[in-house]
Image (cartoon, rainbow, N blue to C red; front, side, top):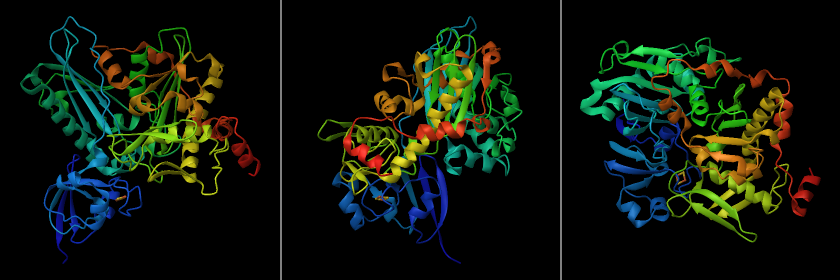
Length: 505
Ligand code: FES
């Protein structure tokens, strides 16, 4: 029988029993770790820090990592073989998590409450004083379900085999709350959680079967309510735990919370809220009615499926500017670049359009079919195509909602960008590539609207706004396919090279 080696992966706390001698690349890839240079040992994008155990540096480590990094125990995961027990910190899993500092609405009641933004990738929880509305403590974490797959559909598949993910997330949140409240846990009277439809169903123990196939319609989108006793949580037995209602299909309570946080429903002027991710969610409306929809955008906004794509971690090009004669790149951590994250990709394509290196049809105009951003990081032709698919889906979704509303793009007075990605993307670039077809001065990065909306919902029993919201299933709309194809093109610019490239198509 072959020997096994124990490998522990932080910060997700995943423990693997690997066959002795197995490469870490094959093991980590199953958990969504990316290998931007195809595990060639040249980009440094797969860095891990050895916390326990020993790994001798290989030649690629010595060439790619600095002396300080080597001394701190950093190694390239694509060069490690499982020879002895190891505890590793995966750098790709260390990402900034967007929180929110605003207070909750003050109540005349005494006691504590908890607001939770339960995301597919990250979780943010805050402890609040009901009487003052003040945020008392904050905890952030990676969603432990990430060990079962990065996107919602992989979670749906796992959940169909049993309650493992439900048990996991309930006990994880119980621990987070215990860490937030410490000795004051018994004073908590209410916990309010928001998240997408899959997170809502898994936490609540609802069958995800209907979310696994067309038309992705679940009958159980309403608010789910438990007592701490029912969940077996170590809080006051009568403390209420609520998961707010979803809006339809894959539009979850995070968007309901976003609507509450931005006040989309309180003013007569037409406004939109967009959460960009693998599952793009859009709401459009005013004080009369609100339409919402979701659209599958793939992984381009997270720089997945991008040749030199990586998460927004140290070494990622996050911003690119075309200065008229050269590129200027901003790199997270001010170190040598190793890849580009989603915001860098959008900037890079916008810069490519401005310099005439990319045509409005998305064709690179030079013979190499690549653009150097900052060596060794390059943008390649297939990367542009991936982004076209993603931005086409979002832009088409917004156009369809506008058509249902009976309004035009010019009628949108303000478009709120929710979530972490929306916070980092440059509005000018989002407009330049036609991802958001609303002028940059009307795009507003709105931070973690899901968490803010969860805080505003503490103690609120009814949401009259739900009666104003209509879900539009884009997949069933006969116009969607045509709008999607139209929206894949980039807005035309004035550049002779780009025009020639398009004329040869
Ligand atoms: S994937 Fe390991 S160095 Fe590039």
